[in-house]
Every structure is written in C-alpha cells, then in structure tokens.
Image (cartoon, rainbow, N blue to C red; front, side, top):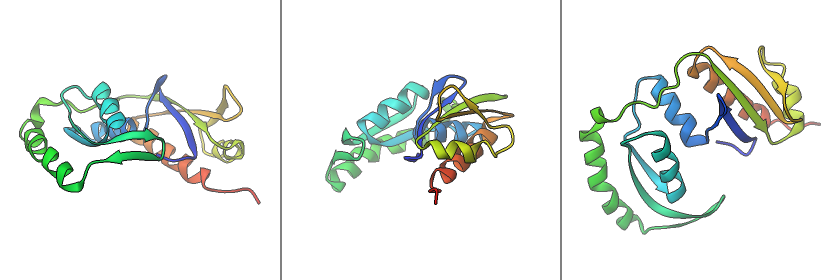
Length: 157
C-alpha cells in the first residue's frame, strides 16, 4: 500500500495491500474473483479468498523487482481464467470483515505516530512506531489506514 506503513493488522491478522483491498470490496458486498499479478500476490489472495482465480504474470524477485511475461503471453494466460471468474462469480464469497475491528498499524517513521495520534480514537500502542484504533466497521478502518498513509508522506521540517 505504501512505504509509510510497515504492517497493518486487523484483529491481529496481518493484511497487505491485497488483503486490505479485498476486505474493502467485501465490505461493499463485492467478491474478488480474479487477481493477476506476481506469484506472491496470487498466493496472498488465495489464502484470503477461497475460490478466487489467480494468474501469475510475473515472478517476484524482491520488493521492487519482478520478472514478467511478455504482454502477449500474459494476455493469453489471462483470457480463459478471466472469463471463468466472471462466469463463476456467484461461487465466490466476499472477504468480509464485518462489525467493529481493532486495527494496529506499524508506521515506518516515528514522527508519523505524533501526527497519527491527533486522529480521534487513534492511540500509541506496543512499540514506538505502532498505533491502534477500533473502527465501527471495515469501511472506517480502511479510511483511517488511508489517512495514515497520507500522514506518512509528511516530512518534519
């Protein structure tokens, strides 16, 4: 999601960008039926969303590097699974995290914690770079996480 966040845990479960976005879609009643990306992304979403179809079009080599397929090859690999995913969308349940949620966020920069605790309901937790809050639902949790990402872009003067 951002280099401003080191980890986001919802009720103790670590969720990366894929998990957070899948949970937001689930909050809106929308199932994730297809994911295309690197092999690590495909593994992550399969652990969260039973029945999701995945197509690895690149191999993760590091946080900022991947070996990708030629676009024509990637397109060919996606064609059938995409059609199957749309046709079978009723078989996949949304990854929904309903009800109040406790969220812990490990921030990359310690000064961001000072800004984060200005948000009503956000408090310092555990380590020097961790904040926590309880959200009424996942939509609220997602919005606060997005705000934390933006706060992480602020540099002290």
